[in-house]
Length: 195
Image (cartoon, rainbow, N blue to C red; front, side, top):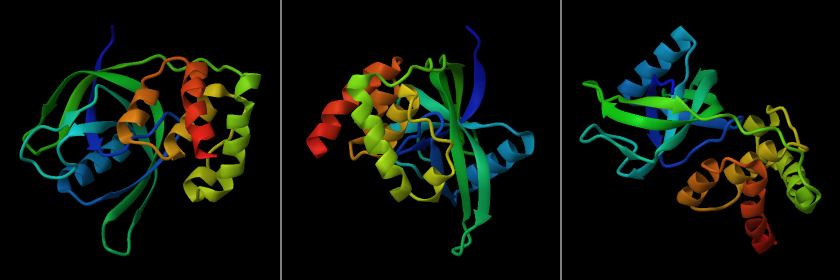
């Protein structure tokens, strides 16, 4: 098992591999982290908070055990003076050990999870790809910039899991699914229930 150390950004939301993540960065520890990542051309890990807050330094963040490494693809100074970034999900990882640095930055020893295999969307889930294709123009600039692949079960499932209305822990469970067709099977009742 190969492991590596990754800065962790605990959030109340998550991102899937290939997905966009716009963020407003205002805490010094995360501004510094973003600067280091951009200078060193490295990523950071986005993990869903299990409990606690996204801000503050009082205690180590309690997070879920699987997250997504992201890379900054764009940044800007926002009108309110904060740093705005757009990151894109790369690959999933599992946290083996986590700790908090003296400056409050969360760090983790992580192992990369294998990428999901590219599998064609089975006919019984073609409706999901059709719905996503109709939704995409309404999802804003971050999604308009994504290279689309409506034939790939992993890509379709990830995008639907990002944009459908559901609780964060439901989204986390979908992130942890290792079979792209099984993820579509779990999404199908949510889509049918919304119609």
